[in-house]
Length: 405
Image (cartoon, rainbow, N blue to C red; front, side):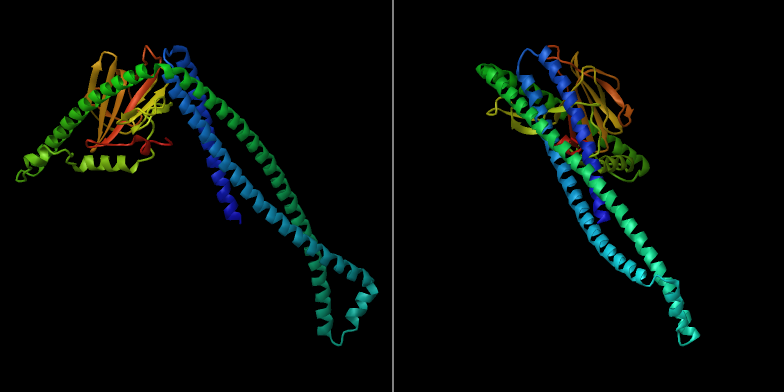
């Protein structure tokens, strides 16, 4: 029972930490939402930010529900303990009362002396004296046990009262969040309804942006293949230097997969071992567009593709490396739109939509090192970094790699 209560207490602490994190994300989201509302000419971006707020609210409600369930389990265990203590205390008090009555009847010093003196032998007299001593000690111990269990009962009742108060607080919090969620969904529906008349125009803009994104993806894919080929040439040269008699085929050098050296294999293994624990490429923000093919949040009939994730962050935010590695390329798509590619063994991370870059090709970077500033769109007022992860040239969902995404 103690082990179970300790385990539930630990879970409760983790949920409390997660709840605090979600609440901070909601506050950040709300601040960004207000910024977007002030600067955004179109309601589309507001809808996207608002949709993320709704998701965060749902997460918060779900986390609070888990807390409430754990608290109810703790309360049930405590109530069982209280019931057990009450039963034991009742039995102890009854037994103690009988003992007191018995002691009262034989309370005279003379009767106790006669009990010992009427013994048939010295040994019997000694045993009777020991019995009376043990009886007195037992009565004393029973009194102490009654006091101990009474104290325990007070503690458990106190815990239960605190837990009842905490549960009522969680219920009130959840009700407040449910009302807030309902309000957010109503606002979202109004926004969606308000932009339905511009559906064709919005769809055309989205398709144009998708074409631009795919063109950039193709350029990045080409540079990634070049980086793989360059890494393989270096590996072949190092291998030839260490083993002059060894040969490396042209096919291996031009392979679509990086030939790992002893050093790069360690880096790749370390990167892979940190899956699910990597930091975000910005200090804070929220995912405004997820990985893969999915319906557009405003026009569900329109499918959009994302080779990574889009993270909306604060204006002036710094982009940072999610792991140690080597800069293989700094791409310039326009004077105010740049990207950085970093190699981690046979893994690549790409950081797009940077207004400025603070690293160069060939630089070694460390975990969370600043690599540039995220660009803020002058028309929309949004600050978004696009982040991708791939093994060689095969893309993967960054959400499965980043901590608490």
